[in-house]
Image (tube, helix red, strand yellow):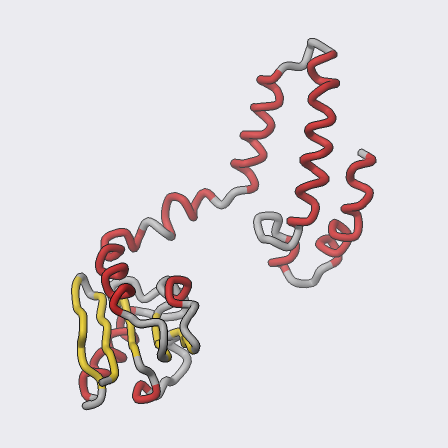
Amino acid sequence: MTYLIPAIPTIVMSILSVDPQQRYLANHYPLPVFPFLMLMSISSIGTFTEQKRWGYRFIVFWAALAFVTMSRINLFTGEYLQSLDTRQASNEAIALVETKGSILTTHEISPHVSHRPQVKLAFSNTPHDLKTFDYILLNTRHAGYQSDRDYALSLVEQAKKIPSLKLKYYKDDVYLFTKY
């Protein structure tokens, strides 16, 4: 247990936090505790094997149980697998976007274009002036976080009416408009 002493400030901060995201162990906030837990586990393996009544099965069982309880299984089974049907089209559209220029896109695509100078997310509660963007990349089938299909389709219809924007790519409800 002496290995946990340096981790006490992080543990106390997580416990006393008002923000539920900081108290949730699957997020990155309690991550500084992890190396100390690993040290504690590694040092205790020697005592488990010396006592003969404990075995590696016990260690594997508890490690697997800890993984299952701490991980967010729904991320592996539901949330990210929903958009697999448009993955190829999204990747093809992302490949057509050049590094320079501002882009309006959905929440799920934004990490793939984050090295652009300006990335705005198409949230349904935020109005956007589409004329200011060099690229508009929308997955209307899976509009994503804080958006919906109707809003994404309304953005597509608005983009079609702007003369300076041209539909460069369309496949599987993935639209890419570029400014020319």
